[in-house]
Structures are given as structure tokens and as C-alpha cells.
Length: 283
Ligand code: CAA
Ligand code: NAD
Figure 1 (cartoon, helix red, strand yellow):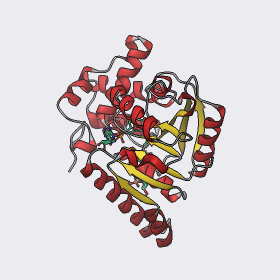
Figure 2 (cartoon, rainbow, N blue to C red):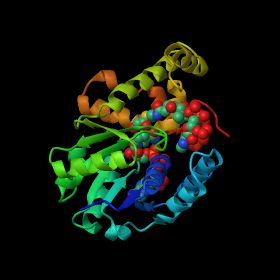
Figure 3 (cartoon, rainbow, N blue to C red):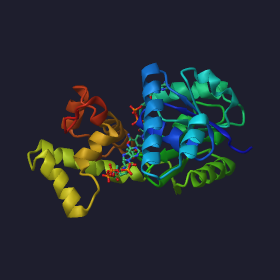
Figure 4 (cartoon, helix red, strand yellow):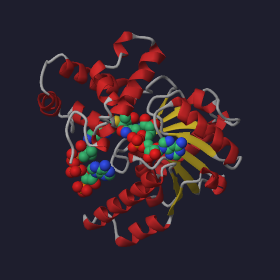
């Protein structure tokens, strides 16, 4: 069955970006969040981004209006009834995701594909929370979603060829390049990226160099668009810690142990840009 209507669960930085790209690509979109303020903020963020794109003459006013007309919001997940697909983008925590997948399995139409934007958690385990493991798949977008071209598509043990094909086609419709990745902790992107970020935090922790200088080394020395500490703030330090924990638990290898400084910042509520404080101070 063709995918026409999509529910995006979680209206944070990733969910709002995914909802925007889907609406701009012609899908009917229902954006969901448990937190009403977060939902309003997510919807506002999308409108601001589209307005900016019109101002920059990247899209026409008509395209912005079309995307906004296709986009609705709800705090009630049971409204998933008419959707052909769901894309979950909530906190990187297995217990919370498991609960959402149990509910989605209960309320979503039988044919609906249930995708997760998890950065690192096992797709096979998430799929096991449902009675439709063959229709569960990882669809890992990169941040910021409207800008970054990559989507990692991750098959769980039981994901069907039909589900994989539908999601790969959808990625193409969203003008993204899909790569197929196997279900290992951190997949490919975060298995490579996150140990680098964690190592940058260890370098800071051990007094090798200052925050600014560590970032300058990687920006000017390696031509990265952002230094690793700026990137960690941008991703969210809570998300970075969750991913390191998944790598550490999943591989049982001490090379993936999260830096104590990362844990300390998260315990302090310093989540990076989204909370106003991380390695840098915002606003
Ligand atoms: N949402 C949507 N669009 C955004 C955006 C956002 N949050 N931030 C920037 N953009 C867009 C803007 O449209 C902007 O274009 P305009 O100025 O025409 O509006 C364009 O990006 C360039 O932005 P800027 O000029 O402000 O800044 P920049 O040149 O430094 O680019 C960047 C910003 C694209 C984010 C760039 O710094 C970059 O590529 N950073 C690295 C991003 C990265 O590594 N992402 C992967 C993170 S890891 C991940 O996603 C996986 C995971 O599971 C954790
Ligand atoms: P975020 O903190 O910006 O947003 C998460 C949103 O989920 C919040 O608005 C929260 O209210 C909402 N939420 C929490 N529980 C919910 C529930 N039960 N039902 C509905 N909404 C709920 O987080 P984010 O950075 O957007 O990350 C979301 C997911 O995307 C995580 O799995 C993360 O690992 C993954 N991801 C993040 C990045 C990144 O760079 N931040 C990149 C790729 C993938």
C-alpha cells in the first residue's frame, strides 16, 4: 500500500525536521508529542524554517503554504488510525521507546510501517515490542534533517523486504540518500562519530586543550564543519551519553566508556544548545 499519511512521534529537533521534510515532499503529516509546549515549539520551528527558505528564495510561498496545509499536530497518539507509516523520534531510551511502540502497534492500521529514528538502539529489540516485527525498521536521519542528505536504513532481524523497499523509496522521495546498515549498536554513523566526540571530551577532561582549541583543531585541521564539542552541544549531551551507553553495553568494550565529564554535564542538566548550556553557553 502506498505511503500517503505519516505520523511523526516527538516534536523535538529531529521530529520537527522529519515532519518538515515529509510535508515538503507531499506527505500528509501528523506531528505528535506528549508535551503540548514541545509540540507548539516544534510546529513554530517548522513554520520559521519554511519562512526563512522563502526569504532566501530557496522555495516559493506556495510550497511553504502547501507544506503547512499538509501538516497537523496532536498530543493524542491514538490519532494514528489513518496513517500508513509512523516515524518515532522521541528520547533515546529503550523503556520509553518500547512503551510507544506497544501503543503504536495497538492503534496504528495493520498495514502501517513503524519506523524509528533511533541513533543507536537495537531495531530487533524495538520490533519485539510489537506483533508486526516484519514492519518495523530503523530510519535514521541526520541533524539538521532538512540539510543533511543521509538516511541510514537499518533492518531488524525480521524486517521484511517489502518494508525495506518502501522505506528506501520514501527516503528517495524525501531527496535523501539511503544506505543499508546492519543492526549493530550505533549502526555505522554513531559507531564512528560518537567515539570521536567522546574522545574530544576526554581530551578536555584531561586538560589537553580548551573547549575552543579542541574545536579549532578539528575545524581547521580536519575541515570538519563544526568542532566535536560544538557538535555534541548541537546533538544534545543527553543523546550523546545515551549513545555511548548503548555502545558500551552492546559491545562490552571499555573503549566505548562514556567520559565522566559528559555524565557530569548531563547530571547537571547541561544538555547543550537545547537547554542553554553545554560545553558552550547559549543565549
Ligand atoms: N534546521 C534546518 N536547517 C538548518 C539548521 C537547522 N537546525 N541549521 C542550519 N540550517 C541550514 C540553513 O538553512 C542554512 O541555510 P540558510 O542560511 O540559507 O538558511 C544552512 O543550513 C547553513 O547554515 P549556516 O550558514 O547557519 O551554518 P553552517 O554553514 O555552519 O551550516 C550546518 C550549518 C549545516 C549545521 C553545518 O555546521 C554542519 O554540517 N554541521 C555538522 C552537522 C552534522 O555533523 N550533523 C550530523 C550530526 S550526528 C547525527 O545527526 C546522528 C545522530 O544520531 C546523533
Ligand atoms: P529532543 O529532546 O529534541 O526531542 C524529543 C521529543 O520527544 C521531546 O519534544 C519530547 O517531549 C518528546 N517525547 C518524549 N517522550 C515522548 C512520548 N512518549 N511520546 C511523544 N513524544 C515524546 O530529541 P532529538 O534530538 O530530537 O532526538 C530524538 C531521537 O532522534 C532520539 O532517538 C535520538 O537519538 C535521535 N537522533 C538524534 C539526533 C540529534 O542530533 N539530536 C540525530 C539523529 C537521531
